[in-house]
Image (cartoon, rainbow, N blue to C red; front, side):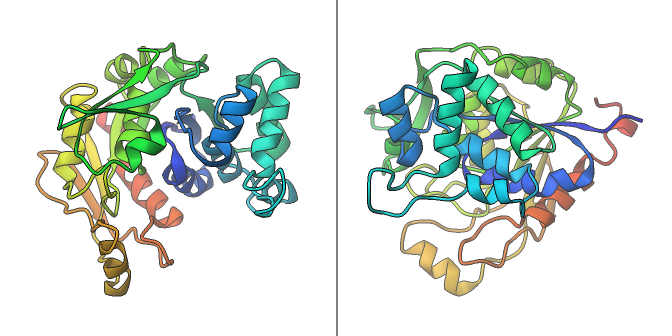
Length: 317
């Protein structure tokens, strides 16, 4: 029997965390990555060089590579805080240069994947230069992923400009052929939902027979999802796609240590409340024992493989 085909949509650190664990299970992974980032090194290269933001792509490439390899560590190397290269990572610069000599960003990603000998595929959701915008509950509109993530007003909806850009090659076919499609973990609007705004992506997800799984975030995100419960995350996803987009939720049931929870509370974040959604919810201890309240790659991958283990037996995929 062929390997399970898993498509994972997202961006930021959440998607790379998921990929780092899943690659150990012999599944066929395709990461579909948000390209609306306008902050940090990615934002600078986007503004100065006219390339798509490489940061999330780089993180996914290294997550699917041999983590201890010299090339993987080199890709994640960040230059010191002084000088003309301050803040840039080597991988971002490498992807930018590779894009220039290989004829496009998609070719650059494929070539970098070969250099890193990755286990899977990394695909930008679109090859168009896009800006994420938000309409807030108070009627105000703001532009740019980094500005949206810092908003202190509740988000009513998000949208891209230019509107409905075309999906990159392979993206729609990967979603169509997947046995499972995973959303998250990651920033709800700026890492996950943004992918559903690309032309044909929501339609491809809806048409796919894949089992659709949402990975609940461990913590709310100040500004972007302040005080959101799990059901509110799902409602936002459905509002930007269609009712019933999620078949199953994988959620953390472990408690964040009090000292860490207090630190997050100072910034307006708290542990996401896992309330009733009407959707099958698999709860597991997914917390990573770090200085941040994040998912543990191996625990998350194990929970996801449990969620997809009976797909073929249930007639999905």
